[in-house]
Length: 199
Image (cartoon, rainbow, N blue to C red):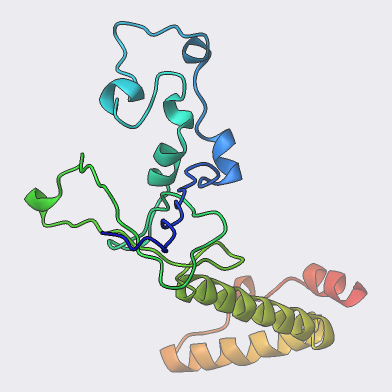
């Protein structure tokens, strides 16, 4: 039994609210009928599918449902279930009473309880955010470099005289290779040259 001079262990409270994102309010919202307590007979509602988790009053606004609906990038992922206000004292022993409602053995899956601290980003895995921030920084630097290159070393517009000389050289080389004669229809018009010279 417990020694007479020892105090009972403090009760640890699990806070299950505030685990979803603030942006979920605009995505997961109950219909007006559900908000008014009207449930149609030809519709299967979330609280009917998961009565042990979702109440009729909550519907899709249940925070556990919202967290579960967040997309994940990898097959192994964490779903936040709750927080422990005030943290845990060193040496605290936790005992969980788990009711499993979602069997996973048939598809080779598994479920685990993961207790961890979180940082300002509300995440424990810092690798994925680091990759996104690193890629964003690289893209930003490349964009600035290209912008400076375009502004400081802009390619000049083509000149009519240069274009005509290049055309004559290319056409002469092409005709020589194919043993053809030069035709006036293949030459640029003088009107186009005059317009380019006037720019």
